[in-house]
Length: 352
Image (tube, rainbow, N blue to C red; front, side, top):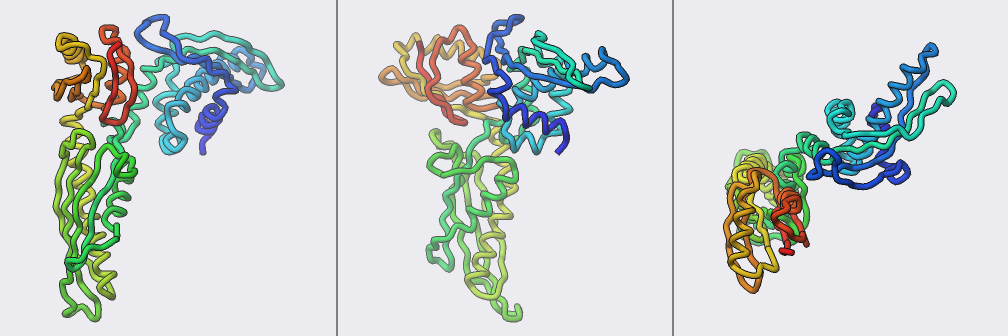
């Protein structure tokens, strides 16, 4: 682990002790927010060059201030896996993310010069840069993928889940989050069927042939994002093992094209289901949709239903999901509303 990453992880772990001052409105642009944090930096005094050490310590303090904020928005696993990218693209470019700072204390301690600062870090700029380091699924709303695949062998239902386990593993490798089907944003539904093929000419081995048919369906809207069918064979020493191998091979064959189809569908039509409460009249709903459609990140919107003061609206995003739309709605002064719940592709809110 390099020294920069060590400092980043240490700063994140000691967030409270480092003195996080909280979120404030930018003094340069009130529409944006800054995170106010305190951080220290130090540098060795080489050949009596106190001024050089002072400048280096200040630079290190600013880098550590950024690392502190990064530690809030990025998981430790992500910091480890992307430490070089984070170091080169963020903490080494403090000028682009620190709006202003003040020196709280500076002193010499032995052969080192130390500086403590309070920095105002541009939250939006930093978040935008972090998104460029995200995986493709994260950029598209980071949906949770669940699985519901029935399996059968020789026309008999099985209580096995070989296809689910193989697909889950492949989806995780592609950068997706997987979880329980009842709580997932997208569910992979379908069947995996296998049947005896032959024993002839296999030297005592058995051959089975499996087919898998699946669809990726968004929870809530029930929109089908992708469908796929694949087939593959499996060979092993007995029927049970050969049947298992064939299902796993079919799932493995289906995994890559299925993930690509889902990503393609999310890129082309990322739809957020907005459940909007406290809509007093159709005129209010009309005004809301006009403002909603004027948000640059929104490509289109459709009112699916309106009853009892609650409107159900599908919002087509150019990119991102419900969390991105939530942030945009809260920043829009023309849309005073309260956000009650957010998942990757569902958003519950109410007009104020």
